[in-house]
Length: 233
Length: 126
Image (cartoon, rainbow over all chains, first blue to last red; front, side, top):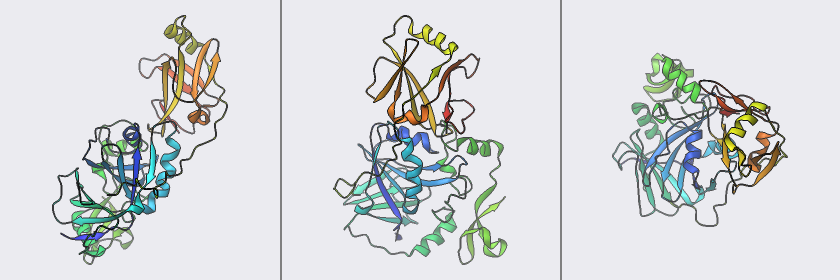
């Protein structure tokens, strides 16, 4: 099973009675019904519906473990912490205790769930790959280079932070449709995304393109023959 | 997954704005509606809070309560007790509590000079 390192992974632990309602009120997916053992991705957007970060939520029972993208962590905390106010939400950083990997092109746990075994927690995403969060010191064989994972992403139209998932793009534009719940309550950026969806006007969208057919400037993940690009359709 | 129960995992820095002494007003219409709601009983209080969420990032949270375990400022206006949580005082200084009669979207309304923008329903502000 191809496994590659994800050194930019970031893990934080969110505790408190208001954690799920807090995340639900600020991000695109419906997460209030998340149950112990489930994994769900949701996206924090700003008022223009541009992506601050896409995160994965592990419901661990007594708390929520949040897998995010390390380089986006500072802007995510700047976005969320002023909004905690007097809600019962506390956040600690557990990144240094763990290593992060991506496993792709194979099966995993049931989609939207995770399993923990011998220090390794494996979550299955709807995009067809697994996130592995591994306690430091636990051996994890890496048998794939990151370039091979990006090639797989191009073939399977899977967006990735700093490539497609950036502050320059809307959630729809960078291929995060499945994170955007169609009829949940309000959240920051919801009006923009709902307008785009109801009017059927997505502007630019992420697409797999042949390198010879596309303007190089629109390429977000470059492959040898095909690439991912955000283009107007 | 190691969930950070060891001492290396400190809490992240949470931005906590300074607590400000809140001044607020209640419109005549809102006072009439509060009289209807409270009757002669002045032991109850109107809790004016702020929650995260909504289209603009913050949502007003109005409740009629007897007491609250939140750290609050208590303001009395014409006999009405109003509680404002200290944690959201910086967002609520200078507000007017109004009441709007409408078939849709009516009810208590907050006019907030601190809000840069608010969403169409009036429940959310930034």
